Length: 214
Image (cartoon, rainbow, N blue to C red):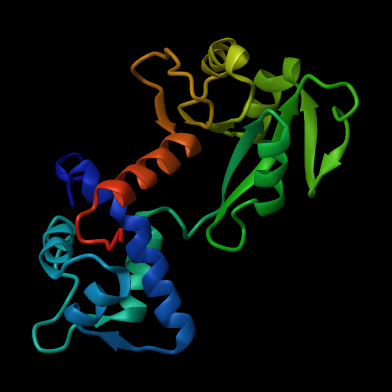
């Protein structure tokens, strides 16, 4: 598979496929048809076939999809066959919630270090994760070989903190702040704006003619 020809929309659906095949495996399901898969994840069959066509021959005509094989395939494709450590920057309300969640139940991604400026929590351990002073970012990220960070600082500190992460050699930032940060081309930023997602959902509910608004 040549990764650079896979569309972004397809890449964003890969974790959905992986989680569902993992669910099927846990339930003891051995195989599933394309129609059953489409119904289970609410993605039409044509889209699934097109997505899978970028990845190789994943199904068998007349048989469907082998659940165990697809779990192993997507696990390797998404690097879930090995532990990936990330860091959390900003241990406020949202940061604490993410530390409590810590992804460990759903993937091999784990928050291994957290950073903050509050002297009351620096040096403590939150949900099993040590909290370091912001001034230790470069040292700790290099020491722990972390190149992906979750950004949950205040809006007015977003760009300054992003600059610190870039200087520390970070290659990926998951940005929970509403600020569009400027980073070099070799650093990838993904944005998670909960307010925007909620507003978008409300918009669709108000403008979807298929819903009954009587």
